[in-house]
Length: 157
Image (cartoon, rainbow, N blue to C red; front, side, top):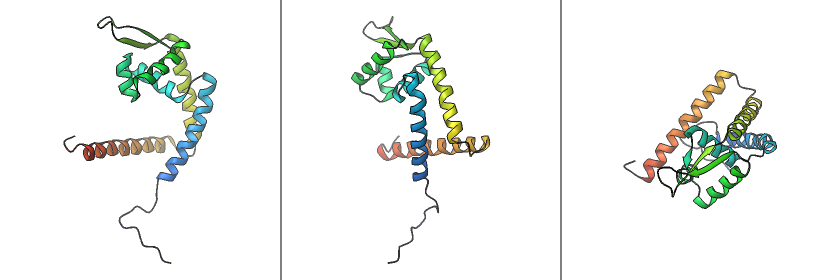
């Protein structure tokens, strides 16, 4: 049986390789986050809060694309470890403002250093320039994919 040629396709497929790298990064990342008492969703929330300088619970739910009930559970975990603090908004007493504590900032820094070491290990076969090029290519592919998805879903996007 002869196979039909695939028309207008690149000679190499990246999906399987990206999947393999993702699994390798995930496994090693989980192993360095666990001793810190963090899960990936905790890390993402802490990073967003740091980058925004705090957030309302409602805005955080939108940014994380999580149901508000799940965000409350996530924040309960982080608050129990003294990584975040929730307080009433001075502008709107019905809202809570969430901010990192000093403990949360320090733990996030430790986690980021540990994850940088993971990336150094996983991408050790690449030079610094190649890693930067990979980042730029992935960033470009991500942005193009988001633009295409937006255009396909909403023609006037």
